[in-house]
Image (cartoon, rainbow, N blue to C red; front, side):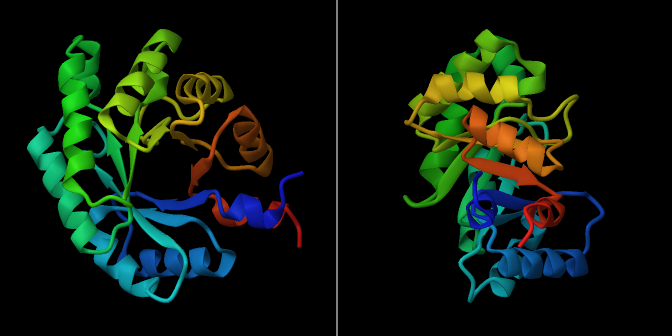
Length: 221
């Protein structure tokens, strides 16, 4: 059984609702600090606030880029990422350009990811959201390969705004594709300790969830 501390260290404590408030973000940061989560994953608008709230904490600030559709111009995504880092973000979860991917323009997809990776300093983690519910197994493998070639550090299952969230099957495919070269983040619909353990067993290194507190409480003391 993975320990409570180990589970907490894998959780990106997430709040990406469009109607969240400063009060919600302050509470999220307090919870993340108290339970030693890996990051808070928040909207770009709140990066500065979260950075200030977590200044004396080991919790990192993660934000999203090109969210949730991934169809922004590459220059816009790169500018988003660069600004987020100047405001205190240490991790960037960018959405892959799914429209370009499904159109077969894989060169653009790679360039799009690379533009974000190159816009931030080394040491800033870039995770690429694939929206796996819209992809078949071969497409997931192809997308993972592109992400690796573009220099990203993680592949991630879902935005939470697509037609489905993380599945054990998708995580297994992603892990097999990236092996030890990249991390895998499972996100979308993960709300129980049982789901977390299944995702970890399938190869997930990080868990994105808005139910982190409930999950940690399930582990006991």
